[in-house]
Image (cartoon, rainbow, N blue to C red; front, side, top):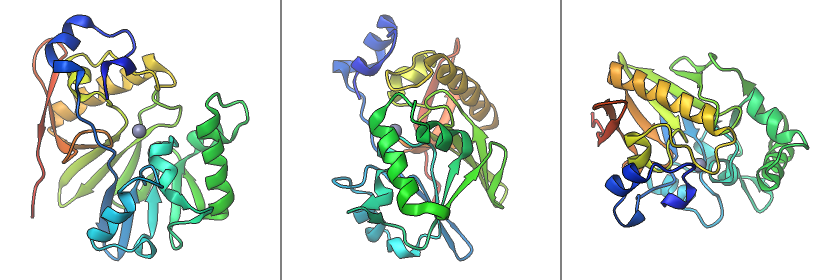
Length: 244
Ligand SMILES: [Zn+2]
């Protein structure tokens, strides 16, 4: 993702951290195994994307997914729910934040393509869609937390297991290097750029203080690591995946 998606780019920061206007990016989805449950967080773009084939390589059939949790309803997160007009995850319950679902199902939503996709998901999954509120525990170990701005119901998920925590930060960052150096910078597809920056700054502060590992949907492979404050409100990211 390049500098053209940055709103009010800080030229000094961009020049320093974005050599050749390049910032490697990925579209990530994550699986949480909990007892007999396989929980998928986001589904990628769908047709043309690699999420489904990578899921199979990882040893999961779409039928094995019991729960799908959605961070927000942009196409690169919900596109993988449907293929050929049908459910991809036949046995799954789909969890979506109440505000997020209402926003995109409301015909006044400004982005017609996202709204159209949200309506298709609603039509295909029907009562298999369950809404949650910020603060709710979706499973005993996964808690939904507010991170509005990118979209009105944009949600991050705290996962706790064996006394360790990880935060799935969804689309809190798109242009990682720049937004670490200056978390005030939002992007053109943030619904409310100022609110997005506020969410980013408060969550960065928190995960840095608590040394919470983060997983991001658009952080380059492996997409998981630690964010630490350096100086003057700037942060750095170190990839870190624990293998146990
Ligand atoms: Zn996204």
